[in-house]
Image (cartoon, rainbow, N blue to C red):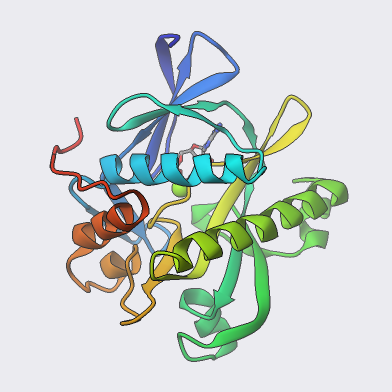
Length: 245
Ligand SMILES: Nc1ncnc2c1ncn2[C@@H]1O[C@H](COP(=O)(O)OP(=O)(O)O)[C@@H](O)[C@H]1O
Ligand SMILES: [Mg+2]
C-alpha cells in the first residue's frame, strides 16, 4: 500500500489521511462518539475496530450487488483504504420506519412503519444543525445537479433494498440509515460509512436498538450492541478491546 502522508480531515467518527496516491485515502475509525449535532460527546471503547469490520462487510456486499462505492480494502484493525472522492456536501437519509428526528418532526410514534421509504437530504453543517434540504435547495445552492440528485436517490434506494434484505436475514430490522456520496473520476460513488453510528438497527424480535441510539439515550450496553451487529453479520467475535491510539 502507498504510504500515508498527511491528515486531510478529522471528523467526529473518523480521520482521513492522504496517501502517496492522490486518488486514494486511508480512513481511520475512531472510538469518539457524537450525537445531537455535537451536543453529546463520548467514547465507545473498541468502536473504531468494530465499525472498520462492519464497513468492510457492508461495502463488500454493496460492491457484489453492483453499487459503486469508495471501499478498496481493509488495511488493519482500524484503517481501510478508500477512493478519495470529492464529498457532495449533503447527507442522504433513507427511512423505512419513523424514529428520531422524523418521528418528532411529523408527530408519529417511534416505530411507525412508513407506507414507502422516505428520503431526506441534509446539509453537512453541524452549526446549522444539518438543515433539511429539498432538491430545489440543492440546485439553488449548487451542491449538485438535478441529474446527480436523481442518481444519488436511485443509488440510495438500492442500498436500502440490499441492506434491508441483509439485515432481515440476521434478525435485524433496518429502520433508517444515513449515507454520503462523492464525485470520483466523473462517477458518483457511495462513500463515508455504513455502521451502527449511521444506521438504526432494531432487533427484529425485541425491537431493542443495536446502534448509536443506545448512546444517545443512555440505554447501556452500547459496545455490546455494536459487537452483536458485527457478530451476526460476520460471525466475528472480536476479542481485542484495544483503545484508540
Ligand atoms: N472516500 C472519501 N473521500 C473523501 N472524504 C471522505 C470519504 N469518505 C468519507 N469522507 C469524509 O471524511 C470526513 C470524516 O468522516 P466523519 O468523521 O464521519 O465526519 P463527520 O464529523 O462529518 O461525521 C467527513 O467529512 C466525510 O465526508
Ligand atoms: Mg460521519
